[in-house]
Length: 130
Image (cartoon, rainbow, N blue to C red):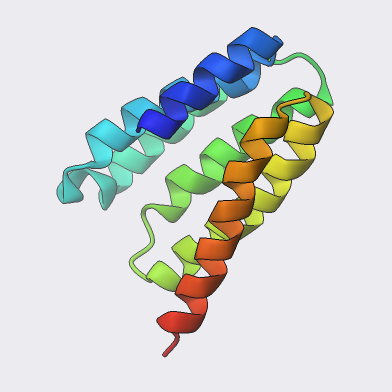
């Protein structure tokens, strides 16, 4: 939740409004999905996916602005999966995509967080493999 709020502020200051709005949406999603019955409901995932797409239309500013929208959809949909292995895989893949985006919008500090996401995701995959 708090990391999304901080990222939202950073992206807004950099003029990366699509990423800023997607992080705000992700913060709200985190609060709503804190209840397990909501995060595992098809309706909750569908509602947030539609909100992300709708907000993405309003914040569209070229192909680069599609990246945060795509990642927000990945996180939202992967939260619905019962198998945590796929959640971890999507977090790792998304972090790599964020690194590319962050390099393009000069959000260099955020790349440190992305690297930690990748490292912790890989450790998690190794530690909890079945």
